[in-house]
Image (cartoon, rainbow, N blue to C red):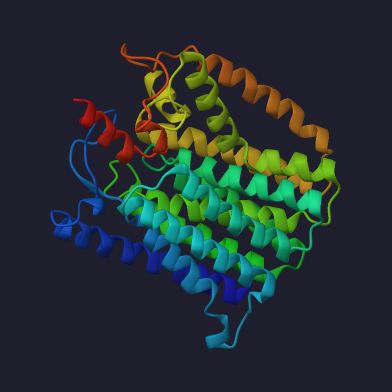
Length: 360
């Protein structure tokens, strides 16, 4: 435990310093490399170019602190967590490439599925449960990516989920997994020092995909020995916010006949702001909800609550999302299926802005 705390402190400090450094470098070189900056366009709220390399700092801080054990003679992450780290690094590289030069959803899906399959195989899951685990990891990875749409929201929610999963790992004696989750939470906290409203740097696909992948994979590794009902209940509770946000966006866009994969201002955070909350207030509210979901997930995981305890929470989330659907978020304009050129894009603010600019 002392080493884990020291590693977490190192991850927080390293990420905070590196985030500031990457921001300065991106602002300096952004004129010659357009992919370093998220420029104002379309539906975006910011009015000046902002670097989106914060995820690089989170990845470096997390991987550096989590893999330092062999050089310090302290805790080792083990083969299982080592596999997760390598797969997570591959997803992070995918996200960085997507930040610099947007990729199509097919390329992203191939890499994410391969990385998730590697984790599922290393966990010893059977064919059916392994396939379900891969689908769930890919879904949650992209759900966290979609949640990165408002200052402070994604970092706050992800840090709370990471801490909850870390507690599960500690009680199970999974020291390597607990170490990884603690340093991830610390790295996200270091990033939040720069991303709290008004954000000076964004996480980018590199950081959001990496974070979602590590959290979803760690959750799968922790639940391999549990009953299907307990596993489903705990996982749903831990991912309450990201699942609700993704479902809300997909249903809303489908009902309006809008492209499912383009960026927009129709997420939970945007709707809460339409209802009068400030940007920091939105991050706090969603953080509180994430804390409640994480707490329920912990109680279900340790059998202090039955798996069915998640049903009232899920029902409340459904009712809340139905109410959120009534919040007006779409501007009058062309509605319908996207042109062929647009279908290759992903739900990335920078990509959506480029499309809006091209349309004039």
